[in-house]
Amino acid sequence: MFRFAHGRLSAIRTEMFALWQLAWPMLIGQLATVGMGVSDVAMTGHLSAGDLAAVSLGASVWSIVIVTVMGVMMAVNAVVAHEFGAGSFDRIPHVVRQTLWKALGVGLIAMAAANCSISIFDWLALDDGVRAKASAFVHVISIGLPAFTAYRALYGYSTSLNQTKPMMVIALGALAFNIVVNWLLVYGHWGFPRLGAVGCAVATGVGLWLMLAAMLIWIKRAHAYRGTYPFTQWEGPNWHEIRSMLKLGLPIGITYFAEVSAFSTVCFLIARFGVVAMASNQIALNFVSLVFMVPLSFGIALITRVGHALGEGDAVRARFVSWVGVLMSLGFAVLSATFIASCRHLIAAAYTSDPAVQQLTASLLLFAAIFQLSDATQVAASSAIRGYKVTRQPMLIHLIAFWGVSLPVGCVLGLAPSWLPWHPAAPMAADGFWIGLVLGLTVAALLLVQFLNTLSRRRATAAI
Image 1: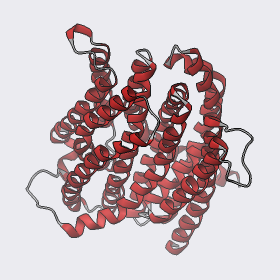
Image 2: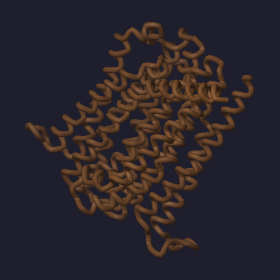
Image 3: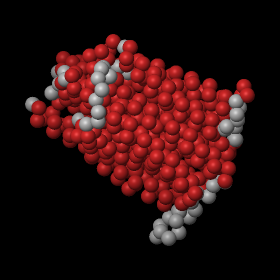
């Protein structure tokens, strides 16, 4: 018994180390990427509440679009991981080339969607100046969408080859570029125009094209890509292959859309409660997004590890890898929840000098601390499921959790509509919407863990 337990613990430690080795460069890269948003919010927060509100609204639209297309492009992670695990290296260049064609189409459609979506600002009771700045923010930042989709295609290819350090280095460079250009254009230093919120959009949009260029150069020069280098020949679009990847990727995109649109819809609904409520909500969401990068990085590593195991035909190991990843994410969530709850006032003060915004932000961060456990669990479980090339069930679960639970509950508590048979005596405003988010994430975590258990057990049993 002791030998069995010791062997099991040793296997867990080995897998945790393997996941961490794959995840930590992505984590730094993801943190640097989100750091661009942190830079935007922090710099405009110290400029004016109006510019911060404009970035808040513009970033809400941007977040929905960019996270959705990131999900659509994530199909390449699972496909390349399976081919790599099976030793089918000659198939990988073809997959990557077709994914880049897919990226071009998705990027252009996303760019058009982002620019059309600003019409939602007309439905909100906004100050004309805030509306104009938010619309300009979206128009300018959307120029980076085609570059972003192509970058994510190469990101998934590189990750599935166990090459994650390029994304770390490139993202850190992009963050440095973003901070410098923000400083120049938001405040108008060194003779540059004082663009405020729009300056943030310029920095991010241009930065995304530079990230794509850097990734292309890295792949061309690094030895690790020689055996699967995708640019040795020209290849036109293969619609059968692209449809196959869309069939796998679209449910992931809808899954991501369900979650991020719920958070962004909350931002729009909170807008009716004024600039302080909007700014506080954006700061809290921004910080939560920063913390979320840790379990998200574990999740992306899980797709690769589970895909490699299944490509090798080892479904038992795939199940083991899945649960180790979920437990790692959950362990981090305990630490992050404790940190957020105890340091919420310091976090708020780091973002803004407005006392009213600081107070409300600290209140919302308490809810953020509560949902750390469920948020980390659901992203790890859903990522492990995607490693099995199963994407529809997580999509349905997320739609139920966020659009069936989070938003309805948030609207009842936050808005207290009088036509309902039961509603709070007074609108709970931002607090009510965040209670809805806590409940939705909890439902998602429970259902995804149950489905992962059923799926992984069935595959493992069939393989024995």
